[in-house]
Length: 559
Ligand SMILES: Cc1cc2nc3c(=O)[nH]c(=O)nc-3n(C[C@H](O)[C@H](O)[C@H](O)COP(=O)(O)OP(=O)(O)OC[C@H]3O[C@@H](n4cnc5c(N)ncnc54)[C@H](O)[C@@H]3O)c2cc1C
Image 1 (cartoon, rainbow, N blue to C red):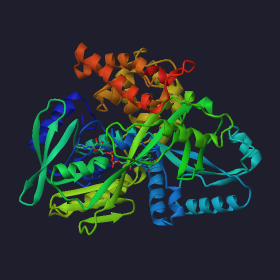
Image 2: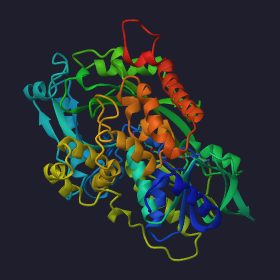
Image 3: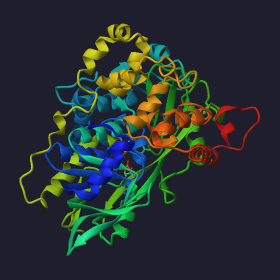
């Protein structure tokens, strides 16, 4: 069945990758690569995509998870960029991914009643105007001191003088990226994870595909393609270097740290945006938690597992505490995640690059194109630009991008399904809460999950007390969504990794037991996988938090 990623599909994809002549091979399964695979597949191209690890395992699972126009670009007068991002935001909420992308409100607290209100209000009026006439998100509105006490009792009344409320949107980034990949597969793309591009194949001056390695078996083989498109984010420089390509740009890395704290730690009915000396800080509602972020510091270390420092954590807590009534402490933290922004700069005098907004598209050799930079929100534009650049080397007419019209898997009919939650719950003999949970994660595909459970009440129960994820979803992750490790399941298919204080360590063995059969793991392999996950969680938390203080519990007890 197309659009399903599981061990049997992967075997078939590996054979096809080795045997097919493709039009386009995409390297990198972050949001840019998955978006590119979808753009190309829906234009009628024969597309392959490989990802060295898991979908979204790079930056695309570690963003602030906001689909936004970027208020800060207004201060730089970059209205074109804001307008474009706002259009993407509206499209994603209404047509492309209404099951995965939803509106979220942010309060901009004001420290003085007049001048600041005028400035912020004018900015937000412009922000709303740039959405265009057809929009689904509500407009901004001013909030009095009295109203603020109702919607934001957790903010300090002594330093705040009202605020302005505006709307953006939010997404589970890892789930969205994987859903993009499933949609690309539905339209015919051949996709495999755990396949690494180790070199580019050349014929004369042209690139004609890639030499790749199946990370799981170690097998090395070739994928032949008229054009190869690199969408490798912060790994771009390394790939260029390995393949002996002189690109038109280079990528530097900026580290962004987020922490999560329990919902009960902050009394707010809305997200909050704060202006800091260096950037902005968001307090973002996330299920039963708050996500607080982010930092912005240069990074030159490990790309796979960037670490937070104690300074990063202090910065986040200190900035949030400037406006919070109940001061946050380190012991409130339940999770940490760290991402690397790919910052691109053109190499001097390069004739090959096309800088457009925040991203760069490069065409350094015949048969080779690449993209880097940009932001999550504008992935569709990056994908379109990258495929446009590739088309020139295909020597045939290729239709224009049509992804503006294409809903991702699960998007169809989701509004009607949400209106029918009560009936659906009765029909399936489950609670309305469960149906809503499934609709928010799988949209119209929610019945695939229920069918897999086959009415088994154990499968329909929570994976652990207090968690909303069902046992059957763990199985669905490996049978339909291409999860191949505990980390894939706990960090990306679910977000348990930063949603509970032990990062999911206590349930890691149970999760491993559920998926071991499908993935063909021996007992020894199962133990190894649990230990790998445990090391991952511990390394992140040990680097970021002060040594264990005996009075605290939760997060540090994993070390
Ligand atoms: C802290 C932070 C917060 C952010 N917040 C937001 C936000 O709220 N909203 C927003 O719009 N944007 C945000 N962004 C930006 C956004 O997350 C990124 O622009 C986007 O995720 C980059 O996606 P990508 O696909 O280009 O890169 P990645 O997601 O890093 O994907 C590159 C992929 O290539 C793979 N790869 C590398 N080498 C190889 C190889 N040799 N073979 C095969 N595969 C390979 C990697 O494993 C990786 O999965 C944020 C970024 C950060 C760091």
